Image (cartoon, rainbow, N blue to C red; front, side, top):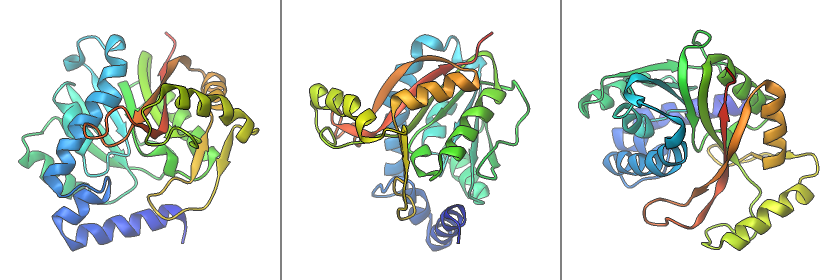
Length: 254
């Protein structure tokens, strides 16, 4: 079975098991409520904070999450944006909609994706983000397709932040900026092609990309690269400890 098929199967099995099993499948939280609490922290720390200076009057904007999973980050996004759209490969969006509605989140729209492109019209999104998703796509061509289709969806001047797997040796779970800088310097030596595809269990990293390669790729597609950030482990409990993702901040030119 393909990796995409494996993901769909495991997510469907989780949905059939119980509510808590489904909503904790995406981030291994203690229960569904804890998953949504961690989603608020992840959205604030990893999405809202690094992009705040690029997003004016977000309550008038439409945002898109690539890989919304159980909706834990999307619920947080919907509190700030006029409309929050989620796209994922799984087929359990009715369950997610029901959960979001029970939590008072109604300004959302959910779609299922083919795993390569997004079923939305051109220039319809103000802001796009993705977290703990793109390191699972397995193939660099899928990573490129996601970047290209995100550019198509963004309005001129629209922005995005997309996290992807990074090569980690010295800085994983550490709070040392020097070790993070060392990993960031050495990744180009470790990955001379700029990326590495490898086999892994479902929901484990199977694609890592260097910052330099991601920048070149984004620029070749047509983005302006605004900068980079990095993920942290299990905020707020492990805040300051570096995680396994780089984040690239992008703008669609006017």
